[in-house]
Length: 186
Image (tube, rainbow, N blue to C red; front, side, top):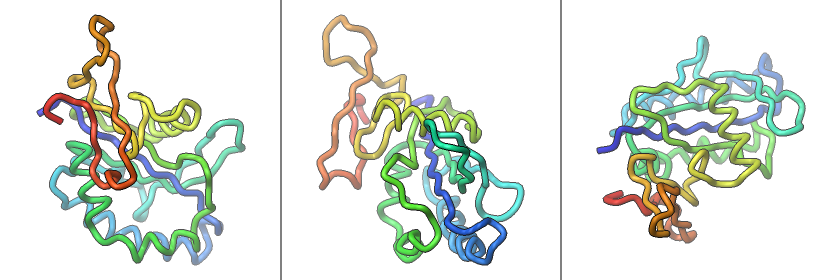
């Protein structure tokens, strides 16, 4: 067991104003997905918005103007626990409708990173991780399922004597369902 948990954030910019009927469909779809996730093995915590099933936050990413987005911010015991929920549970019907509600983007809208067990990240921290991923690509600071990094207390170096540099292993397309890393025992 490690002294770290995996934080994840997904952001989505809605097409319709938040006071229109369309966001009601989004919130209605998010509630059962969130309830399912909250009961999964390895689930630790989820950002609980003041109202509704989604947290609304204004992000400033890159040189873009401020974006009002819906934020899904959770913490899991491990990358495997999160992957099991994301890839092995049927959220397809809800996710297939995402084009009805959200602006498409070619840039990263989610990020994964390790936090000390017990830490609850806030939306400013999540925004910084997405911004880091957009600027630098996957690193130990912010990464994706396609290229995961082990928790800080399990990192190894592939170069003798070079210190605790993070090591990661790219996943082939067939391996995306199961996060992989070079972590000892991971």
